[in-house]
Length: 155
View 1 (spheres, rainbow, N blue to C red):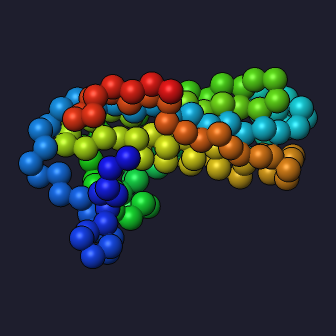
View 2: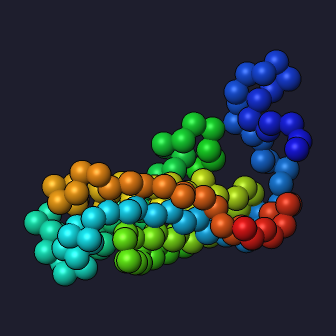
């Protein structure tokens, strides 16, 4: 493990200088899951949630959140995102969100992918909480990244 890049020599937080890094194609994939009751999941699948199409709204929320990551997470660089895709896949006991974010830039998009997944799953919770207040969000993590100085990585 190297030094923490967001701390200066005195231990104070600072934004990392990426000015000397090369612009390269970068991509990150993150995933997470929300577990819920069979009744809530059935209502989402059937499009029977009173607030509307849960999966469509959650997808838009995740895409919007990815584009606003630097406004939400201190010390993140604003990035020219070239693509955000967000898949919301219902399973046996919940919904899995998978976000893929890409840029041509000087730093990676892992935080943008994580933010997209988080916002999408929070939106599912918000829209379906009347049906199940015990939903659980978890397992949010980066599962793949491509490009940049450290190269490609897959969980």
